[in-house]
Length: 342
Image (cartoon, rainbow, N blue to C red; front, top):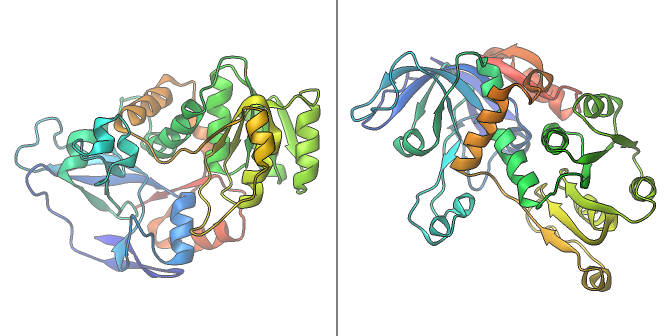
């Protein structure tokens, strides 16, 4: 089969590799759609991911497809089933799993290889985090389950209440997903973005207000003005740079919540006003990854039709075009997600 193999920094090669076979408990899925992702873009730039992928390795992790082989002992899935196989599964036995923090599992199993004609799904992911897709849901929409689960987790982890004013910093795919989820939950969303395309997408996805500027100080002033300078109830940072983390803290009201959703580079530090945090009783949170239960919520939201899945698929390409797609993303293309169709 043809598959994308990551060999290092900005080095993806489309190669011929053996079609995988299912061991006991595993399934083989013919990939119907694999989606580009900000994490994959980071891995492409850096050439590795400390927790998920060490080159040379098969690449990509957001996918949906059709089961073509089920290994011995697999009872829940059979050839012909349309499934979304998530990119990870917790062990269920460690300290964190037993405390319902499965996203922090000490033995979180990751799986890569979505940019290929076929992918092997490990037995633990088959058992814990592979979901059957309703007949009416297109495969490329179902492939949004993994990033949407991260967005749902980040939003819910911020302890929102209906009617809250929520500022989302960042107009990338995850920022747009978070603001859409917040709008669907009845929150008044302020989208803080830089580019025209991001502003247009944010409006379509339910943002009540758009703050479009490249100046962090201006973004803070404009956002606080929308709340009569009180500050927002919740500020969610979805960029992953220290300046935006600091910006988020400046946006919230007394008693508000900040969610540092965007992951910064290793070794990054930020400087925060401890006096303001303490005397204004500000809650700081950070949200990583997802859990099997949240993944099910995400697929249910897609299947309900309330979530505008089609708005997030803004490009399509063949597997052999993957390098071109990533080069466009590195040049800040206005595409939200591209569906790679092997």
